[in-house]
Length: 431
Image 1: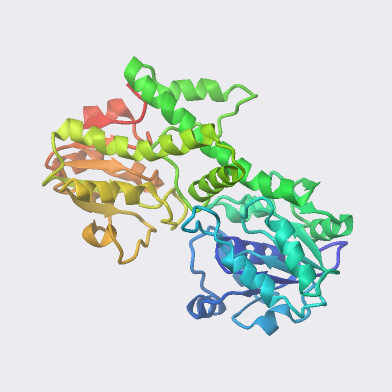
Image 2: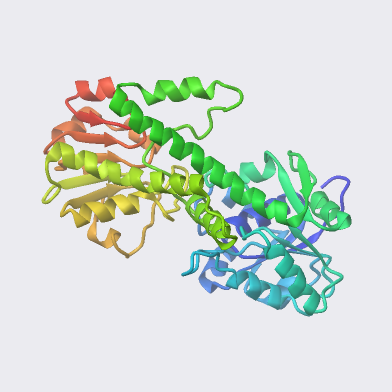
């Protein structure tokens, strides 16, 4: 790292956020110790393997192995550390609020780490969490240790690129020196630094994901209206996206959003508003549209087949989007569950997904190729737009199906071409 000192950084949490943060900070020239409480995960990382699929991450970890350590030990994590990054998960609790128990566990473990210069929360947290962490640090005798919020804006499948070339680096801090310390830590990252107060930084993360989710639900609503009026949502979205005030991003109609961020953060923002006595009507509608979008796919098959009982349906793609192995809040889980509830037999394919021995997946049949999943099926749903699906011999696949009924939930394929091959072809918002 040119012009800036090498820092010793402690990262708590070896999930998506922690691994990407730790690896990228090591790439920038810092010495990083990543701590996790899962022995199997730490052992895997020490062996040079990565427990998640994220393009470029494994190579970066190997490349920086001299500066990057993985451990279970708290003392090793904090030894010599100047900055402690909190990158643990904050799942929804039974009340709908974010479960901050892992945040508080990390904060408590910092008692006695008087040598720290700053504690930085990168986890997604409700607005006001930073003030509570600050109070906890003060009560632990760490009033001299700075505090900052540094929310992450990385997308799975391109997280490393998003960290190294971000649209912005948001730093929330009450102390200018702390903000500068975190900014200097990112020296070498190609993106603007935006400094603000802690509460605003916490809100930026939630608001950003809620707005992206809104764009997806909006275009899905327009898609439904296009189906009823004969318009083509692909043409509509293309022209709308050319407006520089709007842009084309996230105007892709489909089967709905999922993943680790949009569902959790949208619900967290709605719950945060409810806790203040305010009802976010627009966001509630966004969530409702997304929930309905998955079920509309099932209804389309029922309308076409008459019943799903005894039918075999193939799901092509299980992860919430291509380029990841993440199954969290994936639309495929809802689809599989609904199909099974309707009495259908479910076969499925995905090149990366590892759904585990849980329902609904234990009641489905996994196949090594899309063609195998489609053989003998009465219908097929394209759930995830994996590029491999472009290479399928769709003519041969149609011949292997009992009924060549296809719902293209990602508008991946050409309608005219698929109908010419004999498919009863349905998609989202296209005539």
